[in-house]
Image (cartoon, rainbow, N blue to C red; front, side):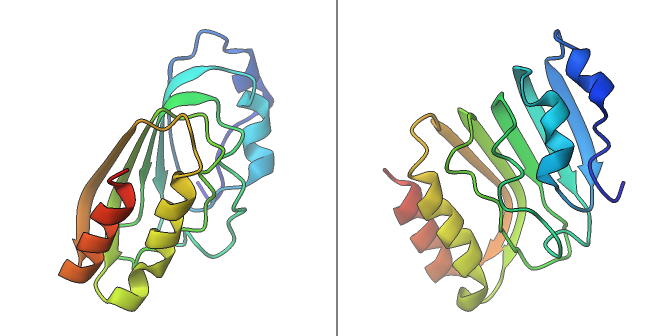
Length: 144
């Protein structure tokens, strides 16, 4: 889908425990119908045009313990989402590609913001393509 296909009917699914969606962009207004639900795990698979029109605050209304975001495989990593106020205890990020140290600035700044999230206990990074220097910087940021 171009945007998350969340309609108001999703909001009445009070027993919903897992929600997996695929979209090319995230919009805060699309998340509103399920903001009141406590969903155990949310999986978001982002399409190739991710990063062009996103609302940085679009993840703030997800009420979930576990959030897994799969970024486009062939695209240089571009993280504009604000995870600092997310309710997630566990965050999993997949397909992080920043092959030049300068390309990793988005990812490193996102990790700095994650330090402001007191609920976050688990961070899993899958399929990272980066330089050794950036990898060391990533480890230093998440060590605390």
